[in-house]
Image 1: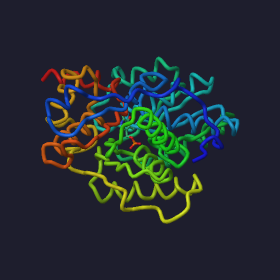
Image 2: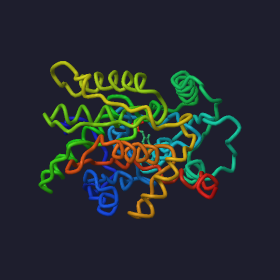
Image 3: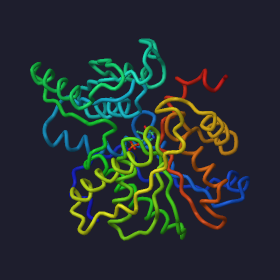
Image 4: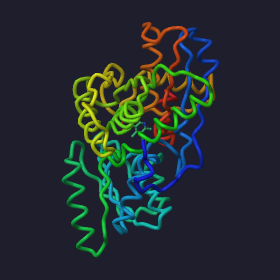
Length: 332
Ligand SMILES: *Cc1c(COP(=O)(O)O)cnc(C)c1O
């Protein structure tokens, strides 16, 4: 695929590491488990939004915008990285933050919320749980324009076809690394939220004629709803890329068994998975996304979904800065 025709800013030097989790693989005696370290991407604290923002911010700059506006939870990694990209580019940044757990937000919160302040965000608006994100973004953009700014709106999670292109590029990066390593991967496992990561990966593998399967572990929605969300974004992304042929709905697999009572709410399995990865591999996962996705992978291995001799790649999408906000959850 020729992705060079899309404007892109670079926030990471080279590729992120793709390494084997040797000790975990030995302990489980199942498939060979590898990890793609997208927690080591550039911008403050790394994580998957950095790849999406390379294309989104390039688009904003090509439109001569001077203010990035986006939406997320009070502990949003996406908002943290949007603020970091704005700082890097000399743009202004405004955030609309949804109170994911009513009453739980404090104006002295740590984690990502602290970082918004350090990163020079010029305006933060807190809105109640289940607000209409697109309506709030529209309102904020109109207000910014009325104040003389040139706003560029980035949707929740950066998950539109431009943002998802970051994960099309990641699929190509993974294939290039696997080829260099002489390694044939069977599966990529990723957390799935606003679905740009999963849809981008599927578009990338499909568009490159690769049969690597992508398994999404949902962090907020049941299987049917997440698959539909992913399918719509995959269609739009395929169109953006100019891919021909029927978009393969059959390649979309979203597992709704591991997000527990809801988005952002810790589960005992997540806590065990975060502790296990830290203690066996020295790798820090996060409570909201990768901890739940790893809990899913561990359970699926236990159930025999991935077999001895197969190769699975866990995509570490980042999120560690939010972990410090959850100190009480882990000390309990
Ligand atoms: C946003 C996010 C995800 C989910 O990615 P989507 O593209 O929204 O599905 C996973 N992990 C982390 C750490 C994130 O911040």
